[in-house]
Length: 393
Image 1 (cartoon, rainbow, N blue to C red):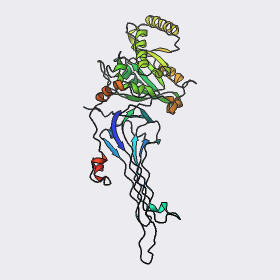
Image 2: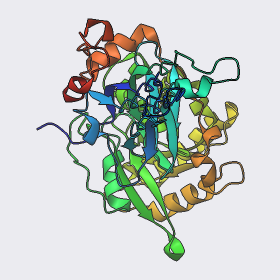
Image 3: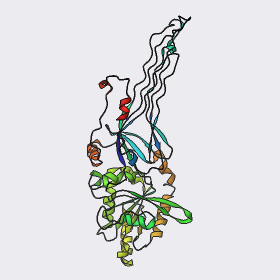
Image 4: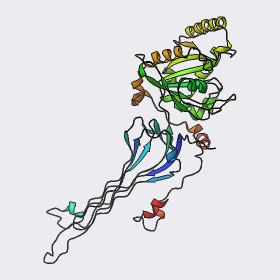
């Protein structure tokens, strides 16, 4: 069954053009020299993005292939002003990023509820000939046309807003940890890539405090180049304030797997390495205390040799071992002076990169957005001023 979690859509947007001004001369009985009375045209509608915390995916926009704003009305006689085109608001979940689908350039992002971002500005209406009257030109026989519309094919990409993001290979125990710490119930099974979509869980802490944890599908070596599911979901890690690396305790070389995960993040976005990190060694119920002590000492030496100040916690989500210790470490790191939670909602907390055009076509195909969007050329219309038929597309 197709998932309702949609974090990637492609839409053709077009703002409204401004209405043309009227070129009209007043003709009334007993006033043969009525003069100009052409009104101004109305402005075209704009396309505006608006953050809405009631949405958590882009599912409501999946089948919105075209979004058009209204055109401004033309000016009329008796200095009648043309009607303004209605603005179109596109409600998106917080954490949505917009890219130009043709160039891959970053356009804008929406990070908090109620935030409004002007995507495409509607054209201004043209001035009527009444505005051009003067002592030396008392009957101007010209008026301004309206400004043209703007159009753009955009990609809306959702990057989940969460405090803690889980990073690990498939079957590292990420979904099990989320289900043990929160009321979230992700699918758990003993095969790779059980988690096919990100999920969020609210983890309760002391004194009625809490933080949000994001379960990201497993990463494999080469994920930054498109292998597995990593390329599709690595973007969700960009918005997390803290990264929790998870490596199973029965792995042959824990530090090597940790470095592979770190390398994939570096290749995808080097700025991810600036985030605070915690290393959790999972499935420690399979290890005895003596072996845990040896692994802890060895890991700490390897991390110190690399100059990394990364806390290490041995946990078992199934056996409920050391989960309180893990929550204490996560809370301490989240509230560290250098890693304030409030920073995740500021525009400076994440630097958006343009799309890599070498992988752009493959990314569109992977998201099911490789089909072409049909564009309407005004020159192909018999009457360019009559655009009502376009609204039915």
